[in-house]
Length: 219
Image 1 (cartoon, rainbow, N blue to C red):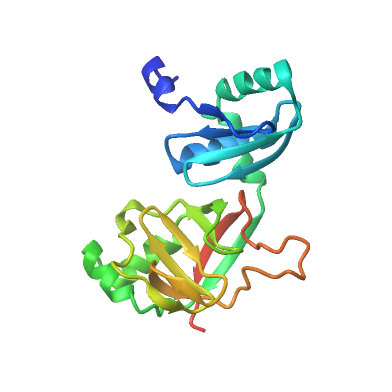
Image 2: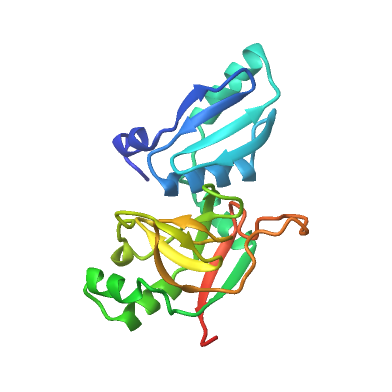
């Protein structure tokens, strides 16, 4: 059981965000995932939409007055560190992304991390990742679960063009560029998976909550 000090450190901060939403501030991206899971699993009455981000969750609602005040209290009291929240992962959608590990930054990442290229690849394909939130561009998912040994900073200056399907890492995240666009993440490889398609019922392949595995392929 976490200590009272730990619980206080992880306690969400609930702020009004207009008259029909609250912005919940959390300490880490992992807390965002756990808090969002807890709400999806057992949302208080009145919650209409959840929008996770790096350290916050926007909670939209259709309540007024004392009912909205009660919701704010309920959000602040959610136990998002419980085993129930962790178990939601087992029921989430799983997407496997085949990757050609031929990225222009692969050798630099290996040198920076003081490991071999093969070890970089092994460490990248080993975890089960989670789409914590989407942002930056339609279909760009920030995936948590990256091996800490692979935490590397963004490029000092972003590239003017990163090809669609580029698989990259930056800080604690890994992700896949859904379209050709500028970007400053370090590129490990490339995939043919389509991340954003308006013809699909859910255009974003890696919507928040999706579990993701990377698999190394030759082509």
